[in-house]
Length: 467
Image (tube, rainbow, N blue to C red):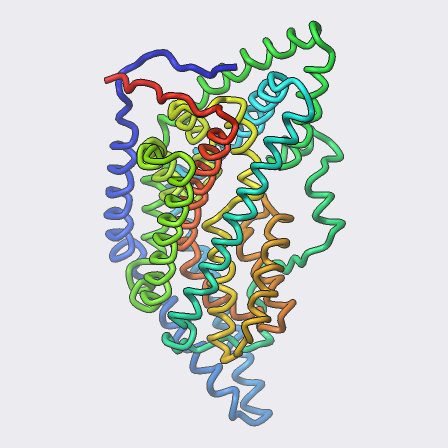
């Protein structure tokens, strides 16, 4: 199945997305300083007083403690009301991004199913599927370990938790993030679907991949009758890609809305407070891009440069919407234009969204050790390696969970007796960090797809750029 697009004029979508990004940032800044000024000022006042109460509670007697706890409870309730008001004011901008993301999610499940079934059916037998799957997982494991190890090394070098000297939350406080530890049962249940309809409804990519593999192999096994199914799936995939083209026209508007909402709420003051952490984390992501590029260079040579250029549009889209899933259909399209055969793209890319989220992996070790440093907890090297291996396993079992990185970190902190309340230090800047993580996830999966294509002798010449 070749998902070819008819020659057309060079797309200016990337330019429009960048314009939407810039205009969104500018709009968000204006909203933050004017439209949301009252709410943001109140939140600053509440936060300052809550910090004072936390300090006073350490030396208060029983009478003072009850009064301070009552004041704390009242302030938290008032703070939540202000947050609700602020969210309502930015809702028109958030809706623009949310509608786009919902439309993308509408596409992802049928796109993965149709393309993967045809790709696997064309491979012809289970041995070919196993061979490609083995090579894919080998790369994923290597890339994941490299990402986790890089995060661990950098956080030990920079030690942002010590350098920033932030006031830490009380160890008994809740971060509001679900604590999901690793269990073999949950891991296996997450892989194998009890209902393909439920898997598609919930956009459980890994479960859809498993069903598609069975369906594709069975389609190939029935011979001539299976060709009818392949032809239907092939046509359906073309239709879905056409729908993708329509949806992608909304991307600049979605980017504008997402950026306006984030900047309006966060402002630039949070950048000052967390400038060390944000700067060091993005430096780490830059180094990870370089390492992924070098690893790709050893396999596909100088074409790694043109690969990065080819996928710049989905990278920008993932960054500005804080969602690598939003870039999935476009990434698939651009990788095929780059020369990767559709049977490899439809196999490797969906797997990558469950097993190869390189940006998220680096963040997990970086953030976990940052929280430990903030509490003055010194973790020996052997313990850090153990944490790295635990993260390697737990991160594979919860793909599709909202704020998945934070959920994994929460479980890991509990495992190593690090106060889970420390996650509160990151909640305010997580949307800004998620942008970089999402873009890096797209880069990692694009490189992985190109590499496996080369290993399978399925990397052809790129499509000519129709200008």
